[in-house]
Image (cartoon, rainbow, N blue to C red; front, side, top):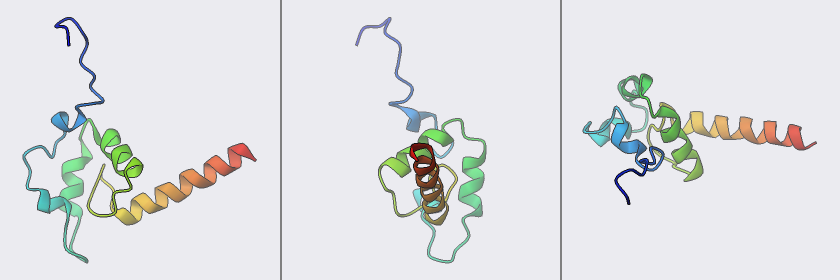
Length: 89
């Protein structure tokens, strides 16, 4: 890479995340445990959208990603699929 070449911020979104350096166990709570603290870390994160899209694209089944639980991500995937079907119909 040349020095004057712009850095691709999409490729290193994790380096800008609020959760950088936070114990990962916070984002993978036991079943039935609160997700409030993890979601609070995500709340003001500048790369929250990138994190969420990463989880959606990669089918992350566990943990809090982009401020959403797996249940919330499943709901979002369904909503997006329904919206896509409506636009193609």
